[in-house]
Length: 165
Image 1 (spheres, one colour):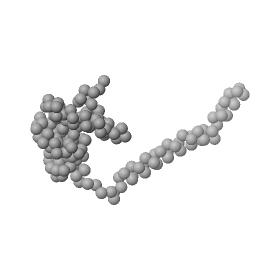
Image 2: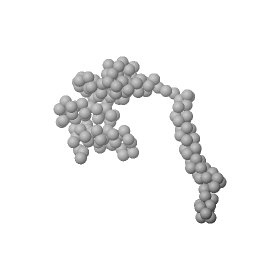
Image 3: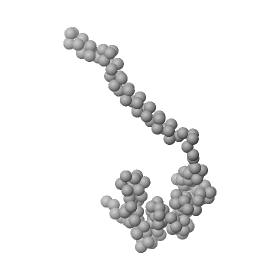
Image 4: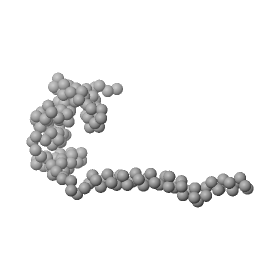
């Protein structure tokens, strides 16, 4: 009986209180830090660009298969914006209008990797491997290991080139 009492004594209330605080305090601190980050990211004083909002909406429409809506949402975007050109070209390519997609992407492919990747993929789908391979190799060569989007572009380019196992 004495051995049982000694075991119970180590789980007495003060000891449970300490154990609770050891687990609860880090969780509360982590929650406070995450809340502060979210509040900072969504401050009402930050300027929100209407073009960014319309591009996000256009991307959602593209993912949901509403390709005609993509054209409407990106019509207000600048002609020099490569992000809008990529989204428009993806919608055109999904509709089977590959020539339109090539027209949208060609001016941006020299300076934007996302546009170069999409142009290379469209040309690859059209069977123009002599034109697509240099673009895809350039995207693969420019891939930065620290950037997730660059790694994703490199993976898509290597898949199209057949450089995967």
